[in-house]
Length: 199
Image (cartoon, rainbow, N blue to C red; front, side, top):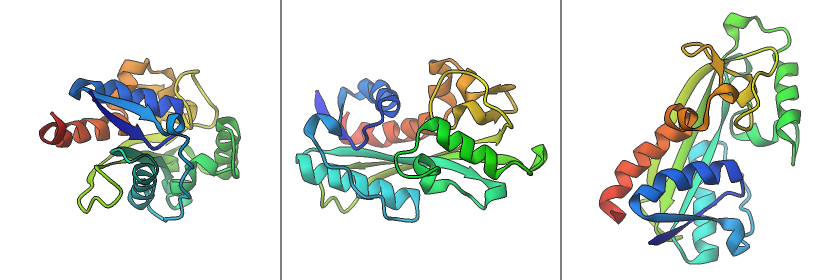
C-alpha cells in the first residue's frame, strides 16, 4: 500500500481524504506523524498555498504528499475570508470565533446578498521538485445564514446554507457531505487523475 503524507493537521480533512483515497490502495498519513513543521501559507491564492504545503511535506518526509487549501468566499465581502478562512478571527482562531467574526462582518447584509461558496484545491506531488504536480479544484455554492444551525462538520459548516437541500452543511450526514462538498468533488477529480499514476 502506497503511503502518502497529507500536509495538514486537521483531523476532519484527514478523515475525508483518507476515506476516498483508500480506494486506490493509498494510505494517507497526517504530517503530524512525521513531525513535519507546518509551512507558512504566504501566497494570495488557494493553489499556491496548496503547492507550498505539499512541497514542504515532501521535502521533510521524502514521501509523496497531498495538500489541500480550501476556504470560504463570501461575495458581499469581496471574496473574504478566502485564503484566510482558518484564521479570519486571528491566528489560532477557533471555528466559533471565525463564525462569530463572519456574522459580525455580514451584520447589515440582507439575505439575498449573502451568497458564498466553499473552494477547495488539492495538490499531489511525487517529490519536492515535482515539475508537474496534479491539481484538482472544485467549489460548492451556498448562502450564509444569520445564526448557526446543526452540530456536524467543522469550520463554517453551521452557517453555510444549501438552498437546494434546505439544510446547512452541519446538518448533513458525513456520507452526504463527502459526496456533495467542494472537497468531495475535488477528491473525486484527484482520484480520477491519480488512478493511471498509482492505480
